Length: 129
Figure 1 (cartoon, helix red, strand yellow):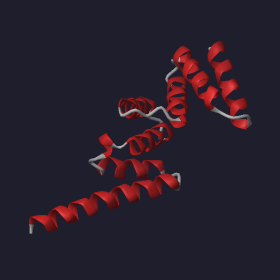
Figure 2: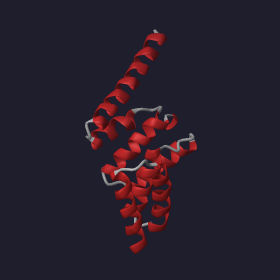
Figure 3: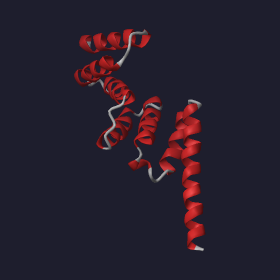
Figure 4: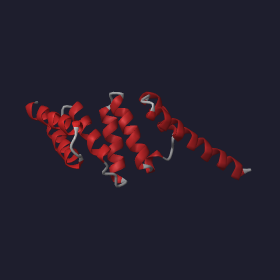
């Protein structure tokens, strides 16, 4: 009986994460946050923390975004998304010096393209602020 309850609990957790990921992929960030918050293993999952951080950024919660990014960093995450959303959140919080440093780290990881142009522009905006 206990095994059955544990199995159902694990399946329920995986269903919550799967639903959160579906909302994330659809760009429905506020709904995704609700399901990521129900996923109790999120504190140990870098990818899920990064996704929840991105959701927080797009729902105008840069402080919460930075909090989740910091947790992901303690788990060893130094992905492109980590630098991009750290910079964007710092910029949104008007912490321009820190934002510029993070934008530069992100820029060094990018290949040539339109996004590089946008990041250079953001760095200049930080310099003017």
